[in-house]
Image (cartoon, rainbow, N blue to C red):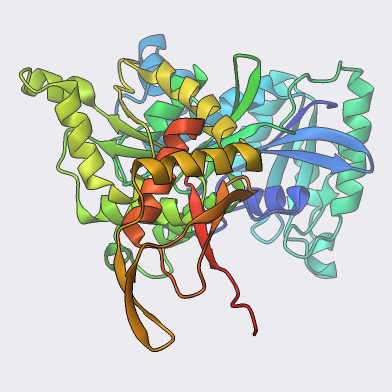
Amino acid sequence: MLGTVTIIGRANVGKSTLFNRLSETRRALVSAIPGTTRDLKYAEINWQGKEFELVDTGGFLSEQKAELQKLTKKQEKKLRFGAGEDIDRQVELKARQALEKSDLVILVVDAIEGLNPQDKKIAGYLRQSKKLSLLAVNKCDTAKLREQTADFYQLGLGEPWLISAVNGAGIGDLLEEIISQLKGLKKKAHKKSKKGAIRVAIIGKPNVGKSSLLNRLSGEEKAIVSATPHTTREPNDTLINYQDKEIIIIDTAGVRRKAKIDRESLEESGVKMTWGVLRRIDVAIVMVDINERLSHQDLQLGKTIAESGVGAIIVANKYDLVKMRDEEKSVDEYRDYVRWAFPHLSYAPIVLVSAKTGFNTEKILKLILEVEAAQKIKIPVNALNKFLKSLIKKQPPARKRINVRGRVAVKRAFVTRLQQLSVKPPVFECEVGSDEELEESYRKYIINNIREKFQFVGAPIRLVVRRLQKKNN
């Protein structure tokens, strides 16, 4: 890894579009609405065998807000820990933190709007920081616009790189220059790598504490925390190390009922991206606010997670508040309540935590390792068939009336040959007679005992029942 490259600039100059173009993904939410990007977004870029880390940031130097350098240390500390409701300032604070940690900074400006006073302020701040930097003039979609970019030399950041993040013009040349500049730094390769990391998403309704939990697990203020609903608008990845394992924690936008979300809004786009995350994770942390009554929306959320086939952990946040309110209720009573609200996630372990105080949050990291490992367990056929025989001996299938060649008979399903077909999620197959059916209750009996016997913690086990073919006379 050659180094870290951070994209900065004022709102709506195309930073996220450039991030998506350079990373060849659609991970950053793109919108014409100012302030769409809030939290930092990361990607690993590989260009002709050379790698670097890319960071997308929110808008820099909001015109409506005082500059952050005027904040006292006490005020900045409050922002870092999510106190107050000034989201714009928190966005800028995150951008500045990313800039400080970067090896190279790309300042993005807008060719259509031309040189802007905010561009000059940001360029001045960049020069003072003495960071290695490149100037990218975006939206150079026509020859006329490219001819009108001479004013950007006034920023004092050297020759502007004329690009179009939308159609890809000039991107190859920009990448060549990024690699050249990073190689010139002669920095040692970064040790962190996302290959083989466990991917975990925190999913839940708005304001249940997802971003607070991310900050607590990572040990840093990675995500902006606010009581304002929908502060997080798009999935954001954070790489952490725990017990010599790399874990990518993904904070996601809060999920509400579809009927309550405005069509073609940022919230709708963010929720779609949240569900898209399910296709690329190993474990879902389903987060709820135990201080509030759990609802039908929570039930639907659990159902969607279960159907996705990923491992699951249920985290009931704000346990400190309910304990203060009702000291007589036991931990088991709260767990039973959460279990009742998530019938589709009966296999998921439940943790009562306080993201604010840190109570029980380390248990989540231990469970992530357990759940991810459980999804990869492979049981030999001999062990499964021996196990199946003991199960049937302990509790055979119920007798049932069936039609055999035009005659009604009462018999049990004859269950044979239990084998594992795949992992992640674990899928098993058993066989029954050609005229037989296995009741749903007995399927669950087999699944639950497989889970208990072979320690499939948090893994959604599937059981396929196959009928034996009739023999031709």
